[in-house]
View 1 (cartoon, helix red, strand yellow):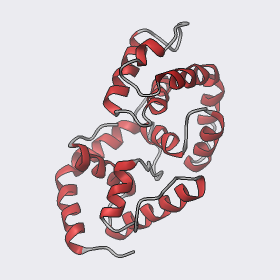
View 2: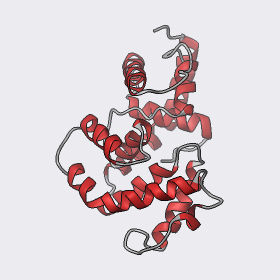
View 3: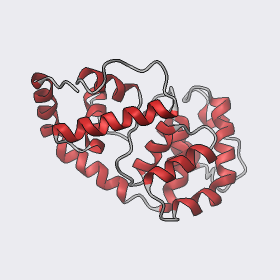
View 4: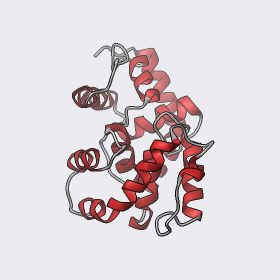
Amino acid sequence: MKIQKEKTSLLFSEYKKARRDIKKRLADFAKVPEKDYFYELCFCLLTPQSSAHRCWQAVLDLKKNDFQNNEINPIKHLHRKVRFHNNKSKYLLEWKQKYAQIMKELKSGSNSYKLREYLVKNVKGLGYKEAAHFLRNVGHRDLAILDRHILRNLVRFGALISLPKSLTRNKYLEIEKKFMAFAKKIGIPMDELDLLFWSMQTGKIFK
């Protein structure tokens, strides 16, 4: 792993400015109550290839209409906000049916890696990125959320040589290890580095 000092000095400069907000955001995630888990996972099911902000607006709309407890078709709340809204509506309905079963596992005390594997296998529409995103958003740590922003920054700062052509399970776990090693080497925790990359890319620390 070849790390360029000029680039890491830029990274630390940005980290110094955003560190307080990043730590606060991670602390907020750790305080998310179990009653909000349902909609947090809804959000992560919607985000692939869609704007995170628009997805969250769709989730707030679903929440306002009590999607969790009412027999409503979510598609009208996703239309014009979320890409692939037909398929994602089906994922939401299936997740709703499995909610009690999944929550039982989430409260089992299993570690983050086991929970991610369980979610990927049992929640249709969740890949490793989305499962890690959900778990991070409810307080779990040390899971990489390998979206395009993160991958591009890993290449930019020398943790990866090039962008992967695809993200199979093995490739995802391989890159996650490299991300973790890079974070350890430069002295910024991976979860904080994730949010730092996001804020550098988008100007905001969001979800």
